Amino acid sequence: PSCAGRQRLEVGPDPVETLFPESLVHAGGTPNPVAGLRPPCVTQAVEVQANKLRSADGVIPLLRQVIELEPENAAPRLQLANAFIETKRGAEAVAILDAQLAHYGTRRPKDRALVHYALARALAVSEKKRALKELEQAARIDPAHADILHMLAQLAHAEGKLDLANQNYQALLTLRRSAEILAKLMPSNGAGC
Image 1 (cartoon, rainbow, N blue to C red):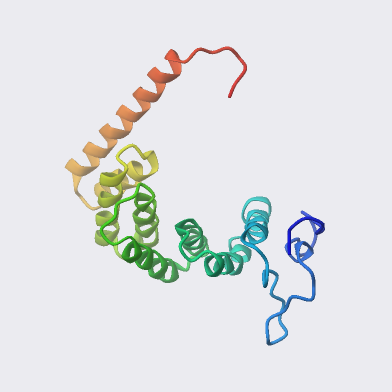
Image 2 (image 1 turned 30 degrees about the horizontal axis):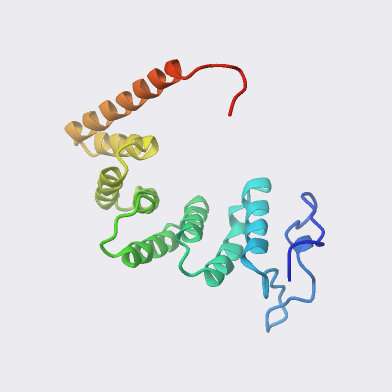
């Protein structure tokens, strides 16, 4: 089935249900809004839940379906882990992120840094030492990611690793100066991008 022709409501009790026909149900009779749908339709449902409704709880079952439909796509796993972190379900996030790192093996694509960063966020309260190691790995993969550098500097400072904290605060300042210089060099014609 295609997404075309389906009603799309963005307000009301459950806008996601309006995206899909009522006839799609789990074997137990509970609604399954994504059964038999193509990934773009499920992706639209994820977008509604995550961006328009800002519902981390609502996006979790949809992301599980996206992962089933696209098992090799790492982005939905990261989104699911972030939803778990947002809903204070860190252990579930850690399991997904550890599995994603195992899937990468020795490969070091740039998006792997985001997995290490999310893992550090999930571990920051319960396992600070491991969180710090994950942030260090993330920063080695993507040394220009401001959020990674900032969290690494803060956690290093909190753990008494002042040299590491200072190094990352300095890196953040360098990034900011570079962005300011670049902004001055860019012609400002008011047209925007």
